[in-house]
Length: 330
Figure 1 (cartoon, one colour):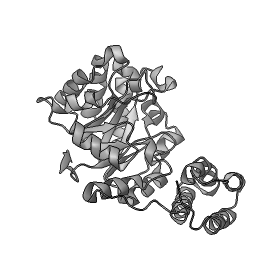
Figure 2 (cartoon, one colour; figure 1 turned 180 degrees about the vertical axis):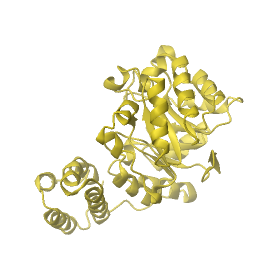
Figure 3 (tube, helix red, strand yellow; figure 1 turned 120 degrees about the vertical axis):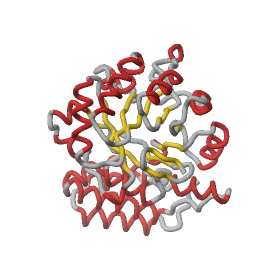
């Protein structure tokens, strides 16, 4: 069993990564249904929360069926991080997570996300500000360092644990790598094997199959795995990994009917949470992922992304299910 404060997770938990414009409540609900053990909100700007930005406030929505669930914040100002931590605490998530890993330029240029990797003293001050402002467990997600010449994750892990961080997720790339190149988990293993480190260490980066999940579990000794991009349009990844761990065998691949059901549920839940119009429009970015690998699908994709009425969308999905019944994915 893995513990973060009072949160009890299963042995070797699978976590859903916080992803901008992806990890909203409808998507999290799908992943929870398919085996995710803990999830996080999309990352939330501390300054946005303080300004009462509508989009930031919406990201605070959490539901009991998601638990345990964390809300992730980012920022480069101690006062703003402290105040946003207090705001987050009012909606009673299970933990507060700090993003020190986002490599996107608009975040880094504000001295936030992975930008903080260049100043570990600032990282410590920002984290202390959050910890002092909440009674919830505080965790951190970060990267190996700014670039290959400044990998500082060993120092970061020790200093964060020393001030009270209760779990650390490490994306096994530097900021300079963005999402490209090789994710080097040997650095995560070194942190985990440091006798000073007692908090849970979760690994993130490039896990896209049950075989790779088991290989990394055995090879690097981490406490759990966080999955991000591999779950987009494919929430079944969590069930598949768990089944493979237990049996050494693969679950049958999701059928077209399974994919239609997932897309339909995602659409329904999006409309319920965001309102009909916004739910329909923002769902359009997901259809390609749900139906990836189906040949000659362009016509149906075009219909899905241009149709505005829920009843017509459901009819299109029903037709997809019928037309591609028995379709075998290569």
